[in-house]
Length: 432
Image (tube, one colour):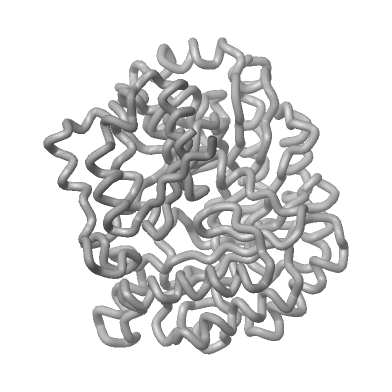
């Protein structure tokens, strides 16, 4: 069997090759530069790819007729559920996600509507039949919600969705304003994984990015959460911030490793247009972040530091120290899994049909799923997802993909794979 290992390529660039319909004579557009260090210089730039978008749009009047057959059939294969909490107590400068300022009185109103939405498709095989393998409560900032609302949302998830016995249930959030009452409420609701947006332990960088807690507070909060010993505790770290040198980046990794966390994500900073960070850099109030060569060096240094610390690599960006950490949601949602989505701004898919919720309370109260957009899968969409799933882990099983989808990918992609091998982006291994 031939296995393709993606040695140095940036994942968002490689996803461009996921559509085998590209004619052979057009594959040159995907060629990398040769004779250069491939990590920083193989391609002109990065293309951001949303894991769900693509395909042809469905007209609003056809939403119900399109969804009904999907909901009438039991799901097969992996399934995840995503719950979007749109509130943030502050707006971090680099954030380009959907969010709104949080007020305490909105917590109960949001939880009431979300629980109603969770029940809308109850009894439908598309939601009820087949296990849900991972639940992710993201945002926004889920930990901004009040303790009782966190508890009852999570309990309703367990009551309504057919969770697998080993279901990964993640609560994403910040460590600021996340005290024992909220931690214990999450445990009572069944959360077994926390993904916490530390981004950097460096107080100066954090304050410049609009973060609230200082280094010492972060460490105390993480140690408190770990002391319960009831869940995997993961932190997100970002490289490429303004003012962040290589030394500061490696110090962040060293701090995370010293805390004996279950895992960590090492993400590249993306400066999205029209975010406060982009405007601050444009106005000169902040220096620019790391350029591509520096980010590439930080990426490589992070890989080396995590390997030296005996962390297992679960994906391009994610590392595990203990067996508690599995990273199931992040892996499945970028691949072929169904995704049941709840909350305003949440995106999901049923059998490749991608949908996006609107801001949504009136629709839910009227007993309607609050869908703003619906897309049919594009041709070979499932193959594309299978490729993305493999690339997220850094390898592709070419014969397995060819057998599953009936397309001679080795021949279709031969010019690109041979050129990438010359450029140092991939290695081909024959496993048997």
